[in-house]
Image (cartoon, rainbow, N blue to C red):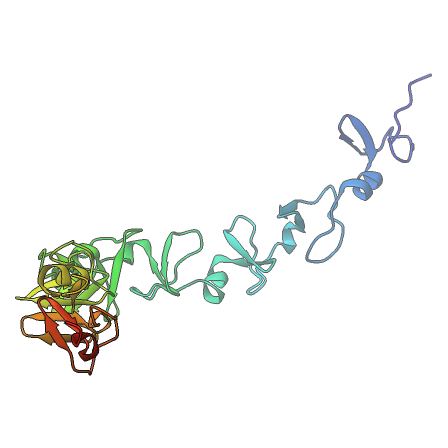
Length: 279
């Protein structure tokens, strides 16, 4: 008696029948298709084991159903792209979705490298400096009047020159007396602190922060010896060759303020008239 050779699933004899081996187990055609075959994404019918099964991203098609969603041309052995799970030939995809190069106005084909900046696209070979015509690639560039310039060409043709270091100002410049400066070059002559955004003054065409200016040039208060800047509305009292801060102009004896009042001098001191009676 010969050994039985049955379908692993339905147990029907496979003698004289077509069958398929999967992982060394035999299946009749009906069971194999029911267990392992996929349905076509297009026609929804079963893709039989005798038909060609084309797959893309876990989806399956009959070869005759593998068509462009727009023009219905066969995509078998043809390059294609997908958008929102819809398959399209590259021609239809480009018409619907591909960017146009801002320079040559031709379509940037899927799969080719493109350069983008603020919603504008270029072919890599079209993204070049307006002046030197060299590719910009991923290097820094400056846009001026609708044209792209590499930094070297922009600095050469358009950038202002710092009045101090004579080098181009590409970012962060300041203007003083109608002359351009780098922020890092516009500093206090005394302490070298950057003056951009700070209060400052000048003397003999040299710039100073307020602290350095007061220490170098301001007169000293006769009482506290601190500088009297006279800047920013600061009030002070001047008498003969001496000066006082308003807050320091007080009677040496009773400390009453002498601002706007009569006073007497006694040697280097100032006193109110009442205290002067006792001198």
